[in-house]
Image 1: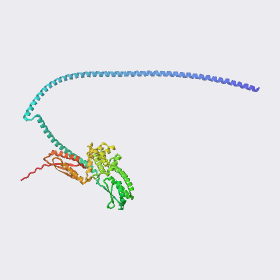
Image 2 (image 1 turned 60 degrees about the vertical axis):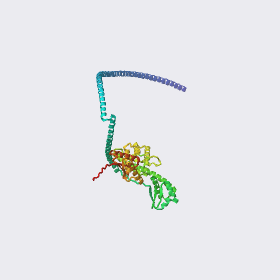
Image 3 (image 1 turned 135 degrees about the vertical axis):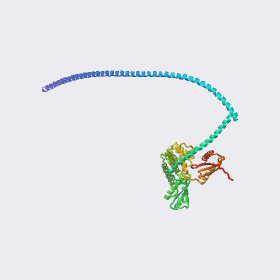
Image 4 (image 1 turned 30 degrees about the vertical axis):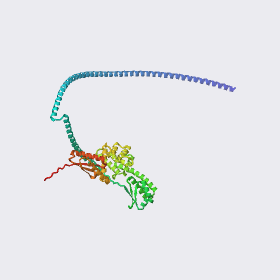
Length: 520
């Protein structure tokens, strides 16, 4: 029974709790709805007020823009109206000027018409007077022909012949005077420049040789060089292309060859073989190959040293190699590399004296004989080969022309080319710089005298100063003074065409008149 009361009490408590919770929840929901509605009304009111404010602001902005645009349009309209007014005024001024110019032109047209009438009248009078003058001229010409007993054409031809003869004589005298003055001035300046360049460039001279002597320590080495039945010496000569002379000369072996490059390879190889002591065919071939390689390296060093001595930089490595090869080339006994360095120095100095590019002059002078480094089996002159070699390695046109023209094979196109010619002649003409064989020397002198004697009016001809000068004696009754200069130029031109020679040859023509009488 007690439990029943407890259960009923619990149920009643639960029911009461449920209704109280429901009531509280319903009350809270109503309060939240009322609060939300109030917030919604507040937000709507705020939005309406904001919209009204924005509307007012936009209306004010639109009104301001309208006023600003209206003011701007009014200003533009006033400016355009001012421009139109100014243009209208300018057009009225131009119209007024145009009317004035038209009136002026009409006035000038009337004046020109009057002048044209006067000129036609004067032309008629002049034509009448000219016809009268021509008639009188014909009358006078006929009278002169009757008096002179010579037609007008004959008189004109005679006058022309006299004028031509007089002009020829005057031209020859003027030419001689100009040449004398130019030669005197040019010789003076050229001598100063050349002397300064020579004084500042002192070069060694070398003599041509075809043999090289290799010193040995004892005579027993000669036997090892020859080898059993001459095998060693034959192998050595075959590998190097050089003749080995083993004779009675004490402590010396001679290497003979016209090729300096081969002779140098043979010298290096033989000295190595002697120092090593092992001399047999296989060893000889091995040492000759090594010596050839060493000489190639030495050639590069010689080329670099030459370019440094000449003051030339940025040369292509192949051109440097060809310069090194020139150390083993000779021309009339003169070492071609030393000759090229000397020409480079002389050209550089003379270029500087004349205000030209000294470095470009040195480059042209150093490379002028580079074609001589190419093997003789290649066809072509050393100038042609040198030009082709320099063009291949992108040398300038001035350098190419200097190489091509230093023997007058082509015409010089720059002063530097002319200076290279002069420096080449100076270097080759130094006393002792070159030497020629006796037979060639005598033949050149005979050819010089033969060329000089081959002209009309020449009595005697002599070659002097080792072929550096030729003196021509002419017959005074066959050649006049004015013809002597022409004869000297013709002989010089013939020598240039028919003879090859280092330096230059002076041609002197002598015409002498002698009057002889005896007192008895």
